[in-house]
Length: 174
Image (cartoon, rainbow, N blue to C red; front, side):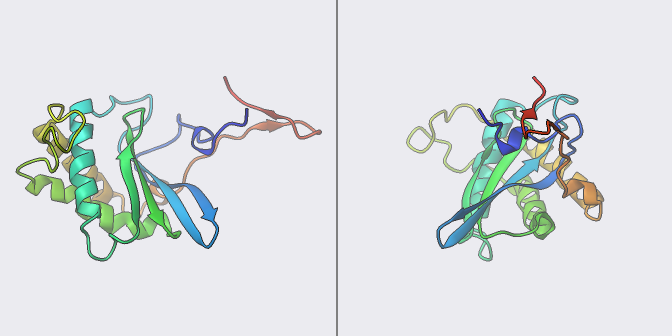
């Protein structure tokens, strides 16, 4: 089986940031998946599950209500490894173009007094939220984005070099 694109990134080198994960051309339109990485994989603790769930609710609500962006948002959701989120947008923008949007989204968490959609009618696990921890993670990532706005490393995915034989066979790490 072919290794999928998101697994071809060298997770020992990745830093928190905003990265283009994949671009899909679907007939007449394009959608781009962005890796919004909050934690260094395998090197720092992952995001608390309840806080991750809360960040998902608050930031998805923010993005889908942001006047200049809401029509481009297809999806916002957590990575299974709990080190960040995927953002899927219509079109194809450079990761740097998302910096201010995401900075504002993460800063908006600080103002939240409740978690949108956190009741049994709207959420599959409405009791699994932690607003205070979500605010802590959001402050941490917003500060990181502010400090590193001009750092190219937070916008460029590190890639693992793969050995390819003369006949085109690929070798992957196990």
